[in-house]
Every structure is written in structure tokens, then in C-alpha cells.
Image 1 (cartoon, rainbow, N blue to C red):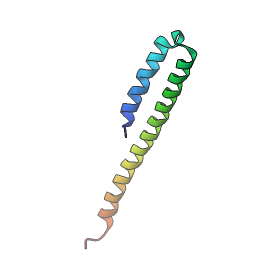
Image 2 (cartoon, rainbow, N blue to C red):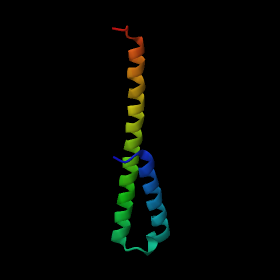
Image 3 (cartoon, rainbow, N blue to C red):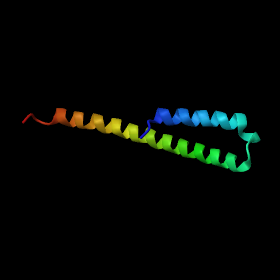
Image 4 (cartoon, helix red, strand yellow):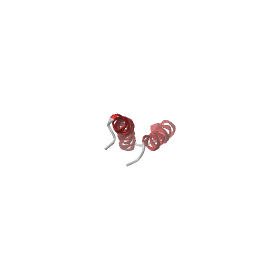
Amino acid sequence: MATAGQLKSKADTLKKKIADKGSSLPPQRQRQLRKRLKRLQRAGRTATALEARAKKQAKQPAAAAADAPPA
């Protein structure tokens, strides 16, 4: 799975392409590009949330291990 940063850069590139060439493209292609942009943005938000969750869970077991008595 791609990282949030990779997805954001893809979305930014696509956004720039739509801004430059969007009005000269046929309507069907415009819809395709807008749909792809929305998908990339949604995937980026999901990846950001997953990365934050993974980071939070990585900290939590370390803290729990420190509190547990040694065996």
C-alpha cells in the first residue's frame, strides 16, 4: 500500500494537470480525472489515519511493557 505522502503527491500532480488541461479535455475525460482525484484524496486520508493509528499502537505496547513486572 502506498504511503500518505506518495498519494498526496499523486493527487497534487493530477490536480495540476486538471487545472492546466481540464477545460480542453472532453467531458468524459474530465469526469474520469475528477473521479480519480477524489479516489486519490480519499485513499490519502485513509493512509494518514492508518499511519497515525499504527504509530499510536506502536507507542502503547512499549509503555505497557515498561509497566509490567519482569518475568
